[in-house]
Image (cartoon, rainbow, N blue to C red; front, top):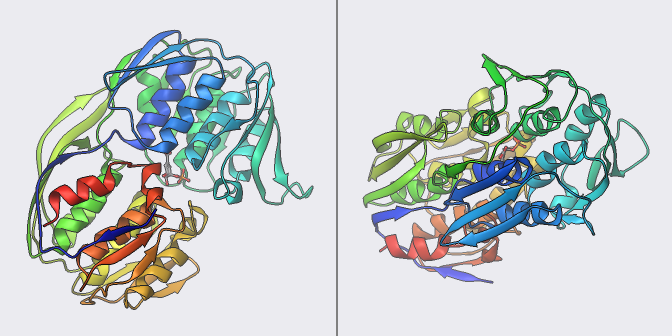
Length: 429
Ligand code: S3P
């Protein structure tokens, strides 16, 4: 699907966004293994989170949808009849592997072409230390790269004390999910703090979990119980609307009830730090997660740099921030972002290709890029390459272009945000 986006000068109105993708995955998986009924409000409408529900259904959970709610009847899982399909979703395959590794059956899990190119060794290694038997697609070299599909032979697992070699919330979550079924305590140590939705959700579902600094301890023998939960709006999806507003000479936009978890809200610190006028309107707690509304108004954006822990905290936001960087005064430098090379696409490459198509200068390196500031976007045909965040980032860039631009493969936005283009149309004038 191709979508043409016309230039705009104003972004105005009030919007609410689908539920957070990361939190929806976790509630979907935990609801399916918890005893009893879990009711989830504002579950993400994105295709990735539907992949998680389809997998949990194939594993025996009964799932109903009623007036925008997802109702999961959880309990013991059963052997799936066919290969589990994680679609485009790295979170689904990596986190669910931890659960599957401990079941009394064998399962296979794979996904689309993009997912089939994403590294799985990062979850296979700690799971092997716990006693799991998993085969991936890759060479027979035990140190070699491994890719989906995975064949997971369930085994009794034992807890481990594991220091994450890469900053990855998916790997952390995979180990903790396996730890729910393991004998003994499971400890995960993080070099850099990553999103902590798993820790919060596990506590909500009744697990005995303790977080001290960067060390997470999960006691053995968790008895999870079904819960009623509300998923906050997705702050990563909000990025594109914040950037759209900040690109416009005339902007006043309210984004209602989005997640404000401190391990995600580095985005707001970064934007305010480079000059964005963003107000947080009232913060509440739900299911252990913070939720609040944002008001963003037209601003003069200085631009800046990110590296280290800041880059890790903003990793999903970089495509959107790159667009803002080009229009800022000093531009944007991104360092330590090698992980972008193994996302849904090689995002350093897909950002570079599309920036160049729009006539924007960018210098890339193995693990980052520099985009000089004060640049103009020229109308162009941009290609998502099947990557939802690239589709949305360049749709927003198109608002600031000198004529109508086309986004090819625009349907990719549906991976996290099927309503993206209609929402953009509502607020951009
Ligand atoms: C996610 C963790 C991050 C992020 C992804 C969602 C999660 O991936 O990029 O979009 O829900 O845990 P990594 O764990 O690979 O850093």
